[in-house]
Amino acid sequence: LDDDGRIAAVGSISELEGDPERMHGAMMPGLINGHSHAFQFALRGRAERFGLVQGSFWSWRDAMYDLVDSLDADRCHELSLASFNEMIDHGVTSVGEFHYVRHDDAQDHRLDDAVMVAAEDAGIRMVKLVTCYQTGDIGKPLEGAQARFDTVSVDEYLRRLDTIQSRLDGHLQTVGMVAHSVRAVSIEDIVRLHRVSVERGLPFHIHVEEVLEEIESCQASHGCTPMRLLLDHGVVTPNVVAIHCTHSQPEDMRDYVAAGGQVCLCPITEGNLGDGIADIPVMRECGASLAVGTDLNSRTDLLEELRWLEYVQRVARQKRGVIVDADGDNGRELLRIGTEGGARALGLDAGRIEAGALADLVLFDHEHDSLAAASEDELAAALIFGASGSVISRVIVDGVDT
Image (tube, rainbow, N blue to C red; front, side):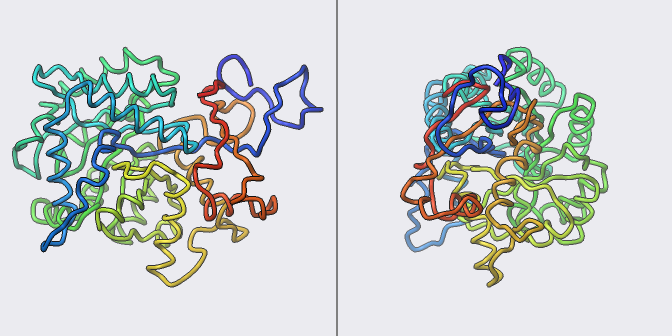
């Protein structure tokens, strides 16, 4: 490793000059969490009682709004720090923090600041995905707890983006741009925000087609699906990452990927909320770049997230090995999604072990009881399908132990 937090050289100890530190265990790139709402860590167990009425995304959202009403800056910092610390324990070295709760009673964005401080305290690399949120649904005003999400206007959003960017070091903490969804931002403002993201070379994230009601609302207002709306308005370029795509139409997805768009899936959250199952075979067929995220953080173990990514497809399609590389290897391909795919989604020079890449690394005990029977060729699959974050022995972010 060099002094700038990057990998200087890769090879055997005998090939490297000087006396490098010897790292014991198997090494892999740090896992990259493409989509997190850190404060939702507090919802664990809070929205799991249903009585005589079955729950849905919308009943869960009511519980989330109750949490939003209770947040102040100190509580937001506490929850975010706990969430980030647990991610690190599970081998996550970078997180895309899609944060949209800003205002406390003073309307001074202290909750934004609390998340940034929490990431710094935890030692995790963070891309602060600064979120624009203006409407409760298409053409409808914000209501209740949503008032704390309000970014007022694109001009105000951009001023806040500049303020946040000026406070970050530009290395361990950087920014990306977000339009929360077509429900929460008008298409005209999404077009403008996207244009600025391209001009500034920043990633641009947006929730897309997580639930059917979102699609129905867009159809009623615009006569097309949310993804088609983005395509028709030119809001798809290689820096764009659509979160979820649970109900995306195959023809929309093919055009979206052809235009350069990426996808971030959150299978544990999508399972927890009963959202549905994304059509990963179509995404794979058209060459989509995939990443994963922990979203509501009911779990922060990305190895488990990757396991769910494959297992949900197996259950839905009664087929094994849905997500494989050119050699048919399931484990290696899933690991690439959790590292290289996440890095691409967040615009990070990470997710791989090679000279020049960021020195975000994870060591794990390949002789751990849960992995001891696996050969070297089987190790990636054994790690994802047979282990958990408990095998992680050391996490290095920017060349420094966390």
